[in-house]
Amino acid sequence: MDALTLLQERNSVPKLIEPGPDANALEQILRAALRAPDHGRLQPWRFIAIAGPGRERLGALFAQALRQRKPDASTEEIKKNESAPLRAPLVIAVIARLRDHHKVPRVEQLLSAGCAAHGILLAAQALGFGAIWRTGDNSYDPAVKAGLGLDAGEEIVGYVYVGSINGSPKPLSETPVAEFLSHWN
Image 1: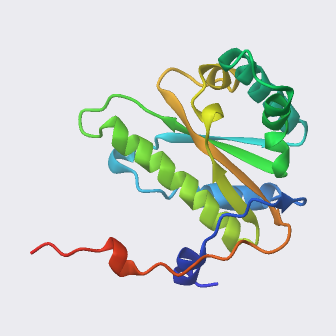
Image 2: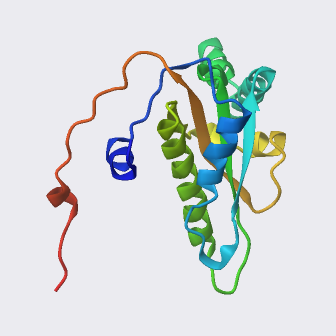
C-alpha cells in the first residue's frame, strides 16, 4: 500500500484479536511514531506497551480508579472498565511528556504526542494490523496516571489498541474536502 492510500484509507478497527504485533513489528510501529512533528526536538512523548497479563493488571487499575471516581458505580460499569484492555492483544499507552520551554508551548508538545499516536495507527495498518485510539475517563484520571507511573507534567494522550482484525472494518463514507476547506484572500 502506498503512503497516500494508507493516509486516505486509515480506519479505526474496534474488533481486534490475536495475534498482535511481535517485538519486531512493535519496534517498527514505534519507530514510525518517533517521526512525529517535533518543534524543538523535545521528543515530548513516551510509550507504555501493555500485553499479556499486563492487560489484566491495567483492567484492575481502571476498575479501581472507577470505584474512586464513582463510588456508586454499578457492577456492570466496573466489569466494563476491568475488561477494556482485553479488547486487543496489545495496548500502547501514549504519554505526553510536557515541560516548560521558552520556544515550544505545552500545547505544541501535546499535539506532537498526538501525532505520535497517529503514527502508531498508521504504522499498525501498514503492517496489516488493526488499531483504534481510545481515550475516556481512564486517560485523565489521576489514579490511573499514578498507577502507570507517570511523572509530574506527563499526560495520557490515549490508549492505542492493536491486534489482528476480526471481521471487516467499518465502512467509511466519503467526506467531501470542500466541507472543510475555505480560501483566505
